[in-house]
Image (cartoon, rainbow, N blue to C red; front, top):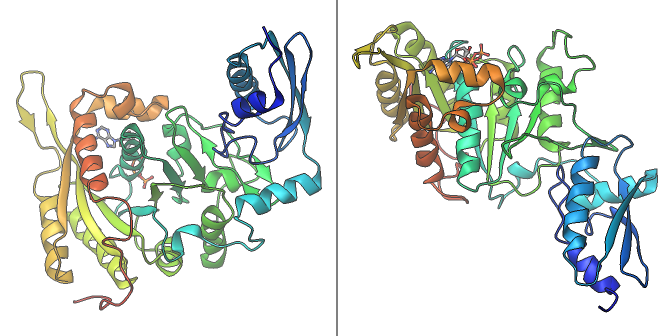
Length: 381
Ligand SMILES: Nc1ncnc2c1ncn2[C@@H]1O[C@H](COP(=O)(O)OP(=O)(O)OP(=O)(O)O)[C@@H](O)[C@H]1O
């Protein structure tokens, strides 16, 4: 058999994506050298972005698999080196599309990424659980999904998505989002802290900086959907988000309870004041199904519809009730185990109801349609 050519090996390497950056390793300066012996043994030397890169094993496996497929290859060895400062700076510039400046890609005119902020009035209504599960349900449809956990009080998203202990890789001042086992990219305000157990006591300007860092200093690549898990209420983060991403659309999470619905309406109204469009309401914990098939409604009924009706009336456009999610023990268990229910138990009632909400959101399509241009009156109340 003939010796494989360098072009053939390079073509095979071009099929390997860096797991964090999600671009071919040949495009981002990660392939340092390729040696091919007459006998067909190939040695590939890769340059990692940082020493001790957590994706080392995945890269070795993927490169070996891709190069082994080339005709005439008799063996593959993968060596690892580390990029020097110049190489990392060059990579950072490549990833920023030639711009040395930081900018929020989703705020640029023409951005095709749908940005949904997941908001609630009260805490504990299941906002983070909805964010984590919606992200996976959208990824299961083949969409590229990113999640920003901006819930400074809760930041429970990494644990729910099974990456509680992961820290993001950094290339100069560009941060790589953490890939989750379910194929979603995530960054959390908790990952920006020096220590995991540190309590965040940040005020407005610090929170604003953290939000901008998660949007502008993280290499998100070409996402179809970005979900932001906001802290409950109408605080500083919601205001910062409105200023930096007025084109974000808002999904309001509430429970059926009267008191929760009232606070949720305020969260929705706040979004509108920041010129963001409220796309719909999700009512969580709507009922619980008993073993005999009957239902009880521990938190009452009607809150979700009430919020949708009130906001529709206030804004003068239709705010839909996107779905009602039952109380489902497997939903809680999935969150605790780091494997959300839409993945762990997709046929459960909770998973199916959330998947329907994801279908409603993705059915709205990718692109500029429906994007707020910031010209509508800020509120009608
Ligand atoms: N439909 C549901 N069925 C069963 N358990 C649920 C459901 N929704 C949420 N939970 C559980 O309720 C608790 C609170 O949910 P979650 O952390 O998602 O709320 P949250 O609104 O994000 O809270 P906070 O904003 O205060 O962080 C979690 O333990 C979660 O597993």
